[in-house]
Image (cartoon, rainbow, N blue to C red; front, side):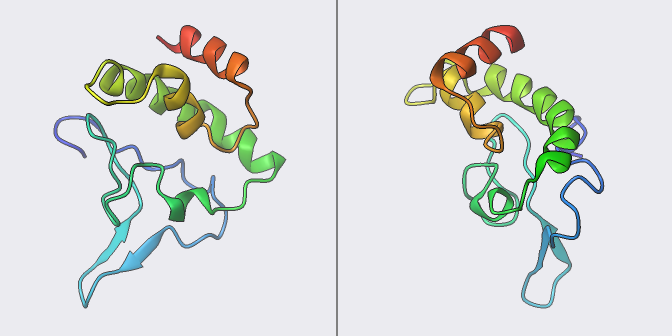
Length: 116
């Protein structure tokens, strides 16, 4: 849970055998997950999806499983991040959260309009 909202962990099995967790100095493993409104990785503190998560291989089958969940997450991120001082515009948010899709700016703009 993130506050009163469910966590935005990637769908189970969507990232294959990739180790999504890291062990912290003797503590429990920490997932590379995040939630709004800041959308920062719980494990490493980078903007989410963080470099560790983005390094996950995403072949066509994995992309197909990621699209529905990450579309929902992207919709929430647009609502949380849009209009913040110095924050990204909706096109940049779409490109950030749907990194595994080769979107042009025009395509990302169309997705952002659809997800608002």
